Amino acid sequence: MLTESKPKLDGFVWRRLDVRAARLRYAVGGDGPPLVLVHGFAGAAANFAVLGPLLARRHRVLIPDLPGHGGSEPLAAVTSLAGFADRVAAVLDHEGAGRAPVVGHSMGAVVALRLAARRPELVRALVLAAAAGISTSSRLSEIFLAAASTLQPGRRVARWRRRIARSPRLRALTFDGISTSDAAAMSETAALGFLGGSREYTEIWSPGRALAREDVRLDLELVRCPVLVLAGARDRQVPVDDAFEYARRLGAPLRVIADCGHLLVGERPDACADAIERFVAAAG
Image 1: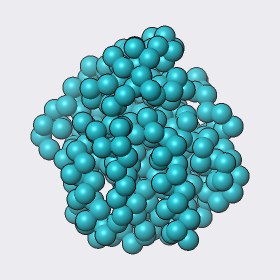
Image 2 (image 1 turned 90 degrees about the vertical axis):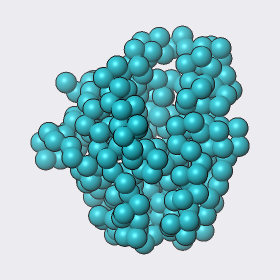
Image 3 (image 1 turned 180 degrees about the vertical axis):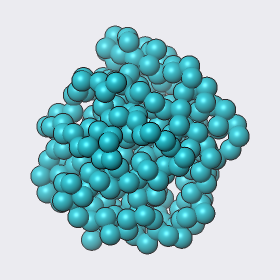
């Protein structure tokens, strides 16, 4: 069932779009040239609770909830992440966004790459932040993602999200070790954005399995637009070596952000916003 809750994204409004019998929810905020943010596995648009408003100072920012995540209904069948890319494309088409830079975090980076390959006319530039799709394409990753889909630890923890977000100690206990480097330093707003996203998803088994079975290296030659690779120096989910491989294969610049882990878009949103703005301006 589609949730009716709407996480807080300052300055954004929520919209809905029906695409092939599945309803999508997405957030829109800011003025200026369009820019798209795509969240990761078991996340939601609310994951960009801090980064989204920062970028909305200069852009009209579109942030979809991917199918089965947030307030978007799941797809009837998921064999790859191509269907997710098609749903992001539908939002861009509906909003008349034209050619926009697309920022993908974790699994969202794989979706962004698929979008660039399938609908190159929609994507002016790509930013791959803590991008999955290389080391996550393994049997071990498939087991991990299947366990996360079944046990749903994020949803269990999210019931105490406000208490956790307010406490530096509880933030550290919740996020540090696998997701962040120093969650105590992460803002309450960012923590609520991640925990709120974990509370909302309805079907993550299929996309988790698709992510583990897709090796995007096979299609990188189809990407023609400029690309920037971002990585957290202390990412324990996706090794920095993956970022180097993406940069090498795509001929892309790489920026490694110090003192943060996999959730760099919430741990270091200012640094991420600066890197994205500079790259987008240079990409023309």
